Image 1 (cartoon, helix red, strand yellow):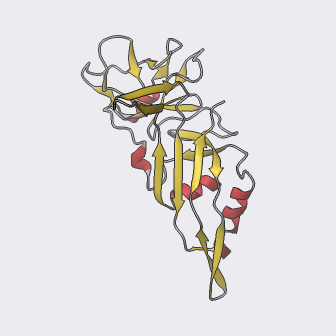
Image 2 (tube, rainbow, N blue to C red):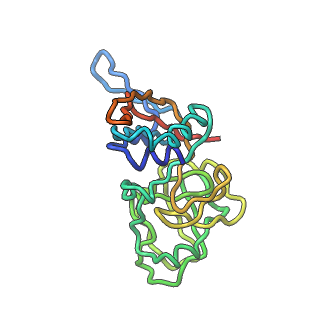
Image 3 (cartoon, helix red, strand yellow):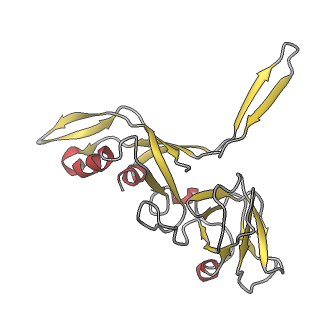
Length: 226
């Protein structure tokens, strides 16, 4: 839970969910763009607050020291002050969401959700910007998705499906649903597997019988895609 603790005490959280696109300006001032197809990984820039008491933070420092920049860690925004980032926006109740499953027909940038609740056809299942998770990885919904009258609905998302759906997978969205096992644990709600690319040093500022921790930069976490 080391990096999760850092997330919960962040002053700011930077997020990169952009595609890898290059631009060139020609001699006659025409802008040319090209895209390299990637998995569009999430990147997080976590700037923690300073002035943690060293005497009460040794456990946090140790739990950061173990994974360092080599081992996978997990970020879940649900129980932090940043929960609005992934919060569910649709009209479904918790029990209705928990009955839904992702279907093997999911492919490319279209996820297929089935086992839908018996609600009005104009009920909104997802709104633009909702987060959904299929297996280890999360996706951002790109259009409002209504219940409709069919047994399944198509859910357009911002990147290609990263791992095939071979059997039904329970829905995880926003702060709801249990993830598959991630590092030996399941999490409630959207959870990102990440590895640190930048791990800031810290300095100690003395105070009476203790010290404050001051970080010299931010934790830069990059989504770990297998």
